[in-house]
Image (tube, rainbow, N blue to C red):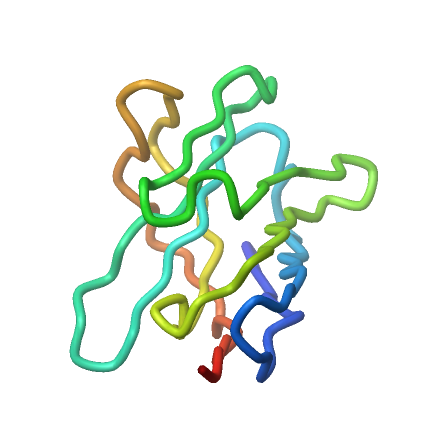
Length: 125
């Protein structure tokens, strides 16, 4: 049974940092491209970042480029998202999910069906 458990969210002031984790079970995380998505109240879900199976393709959405870093620890079967220089507009619930594809130039493919509960990130101004 595939399970994804996100953690690391919280309340932080503008300019602060958080490190999100996504612990996977039921599958080998390194076997799939993985993505981070976020959704703020009243807004559409958006892809934030993704990483390819061999870590050779990494993509960041323009709003987070230069501030967020995605990484993966295959031994721990865990995906990370380091978020620096946080802004109030980063406030959202963040989710990790396997994706169909991830390419540095063309972005995040469609997400799979297995979603975790997400972790809430709130950035105060």
